[in-house]
Image 1 (tube, rainbow over the protein chains, first blue to last red):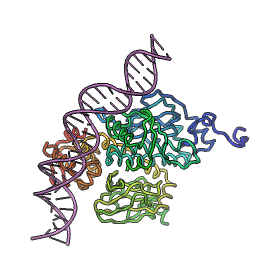
Image 2: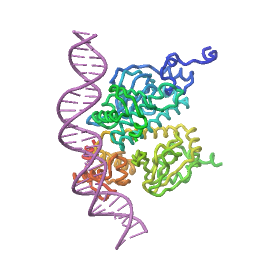
Image 3: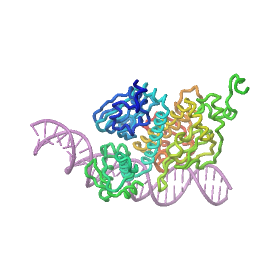
Length: 245
Length: 245
DNA sequence: CGAGTGATTGATATCGTTCAAAGCTCGTGG
DNA sequence: CCACGAGCTTTGAACGATATCAATCACTCG
């Protein structure tokens, strides 16, 4: 009765309510498949600044529902490099790797939709579209990492900061209206920087002071306004793009 | 007759002769499966310094049989960052991406075992072990890229050079005797640097001069000997490791 | 033998870091 | 509602590491 009688099968209630359902990995699953995956899922919440998984320890498989997460790698003497900045709908963890290659830490209060490994792997094994989505995700992450290698290896401080702002702006521009072209940033766009200057520095391979100075320089040049430490208005996208090279 | 009569089915002749057969992706395939993949394969040779694929253009799918290949990404003004250094047995190209995300260029004369895309995809689709190996490869590349982000973002010049030498030494130590523990480097180990100082610089995010100076500093400290621009003897692995942090 | 490329070395310049000191923000509690 | 304080951010000054500019040297290939 449950299956055959349902005319338009519905997704699990918790998925129907999910804020990131349409953009997360699970968007490729049919309602029936969602039920299967959902039975392995469990929501968890973390306060800001909490470590979710530590480099080298068993991984977590999860969608980020709300909040911001960073992944970072550390040197013995404490220096840290942020290797990834994760937003709601992003996926955390490698399905094909037992242990984490980086430490994941919350930046703000975070809600995760975590998946029990064996149930997750069942879904991966039996659904090629899901497997494909997972693969695409890995390839996209590799792309991003290499793009960041170019930034870290070749760009000067000002270019790094400008590039960071542009990528953040592009990322945020597709949050809202889906009928607008993605990734387009226009003059006057408001930008919320989700991380501290220290975290920006650890992401850009710079010091806090340099990040602050380069932001100040962009402000002085009229390219951006700093409405607060975390809020930026982009006055001139073209010039910001030129700064970022 | 051909199939059923063969008691221990043999791999295709060209694969039997292949120098990298045991370490390349195709090592997970059975002889029968190898025949299938091999029918989509074709060897190609390139002289040193030749561009194999350009960033943004259609990809190549290939195993490197002999020679060294670098993948690099460039900025508009000509600055370049090498994002990957590929050795014989390494795989070049993303099966799940039509276009290349980086330019691939030969460093020495190179032989590739290239695969026609549709035939390759058929094998990927029908053989889960092969698909799995491909996925593992992507994950390993992501790992390497992030490790390099840590180097580019946080290490000082001397640490970068020392780290490069250690990773190269580890990589070369597993080329020979397979009964020795992998990745172990011992004092007195000889090292062949497969790339120029300029390419090292582009890989490490430094200038040629700095690379040369830091190598000189390691030599002056007695940690290594420079027997030629491309040949290094590691006198003191422990100290080299300490320099690399 | 000579030319050209790659490597080393030296002198100087520059960018980003380091060290130091205020100045803001925002959450907390009175 | 305001005052307080911790942590974050900005700014300044000096230093230092690496880049830049320049010259020489070494090796390979015509």
